[in-house]
Image (tube, rainbow, N blue to C red; front, top):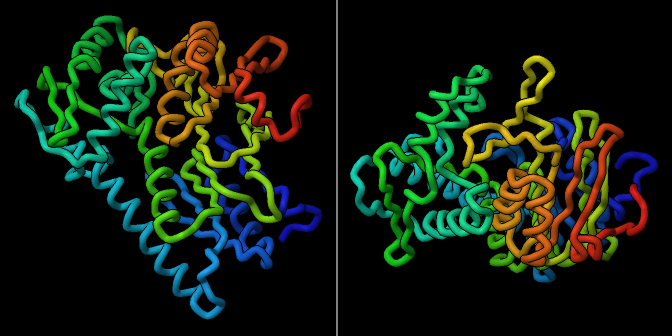
Length: 360
């Protein structure tokens, strides 16, 4: 434990954490309140880190605790492997990679989990007016934001050619039997914008299957919490200041829900003083040009929060705020201004602030 830090007020900061700093935080949380029998398991997945912090169920005896942890760790690893085997575009034989190579415009059988995730993606796409699109991969690569890409400003005709290969309207899904279908051969599906959130939900399911009722699950900054944190009370989750310098903008008391943040401050390039973010507008084939720096969404599932955080970030402050209020979303916006950052939030998010009325 680090001197001067009260582990009962442990606050996980969403986004803005390097793998090293996250590992540092996990180090001092392990066993931070021995009387509560809290445990921490962690590792790597999806090109980032994962962490599970949980209170041992009442049935775990002192002598069986190590075996129970080992079994739980094995179950978590197995679940993460299954998630990657379904939807990782970096695995040649994953379901989604095989679908992307499948050229016939016929139904392609997938797991129910993959079909359900694509259905959610299409629902969010329609609900956001096309601001969210899991087929936009060719455009992202064109701008150099894909793995190993050289970031640059492509020509207008190149953008039009890439857009011709995209469009959620060309992607179809059915749940029974679960399958996907594309209406243009070149169409591809990339579920990266939901995969971490889905992984968080799956790990939460594993914990609950093993009798755990007090837990925090995190993958790459996306979180889901249930029950109480060490020392009692809701889990305290920090929303990072959207800058490379880090810091905490707000702290949320989270219990029984999930939270995800999307921001434009970690992956971008500049040309002649103009900032080009990796946050791509699927409707234009170009990076967003507004000043919305980050969007944090609280929802019942992490994959919902993950998808809507991305969609609202693409929409921009005015349209995103209007939609969030119309649909009673729980959302926190941070906008970049000439004098610093301006924050605004929906009433339901205001109610979750751990320290309302002041900025930590």
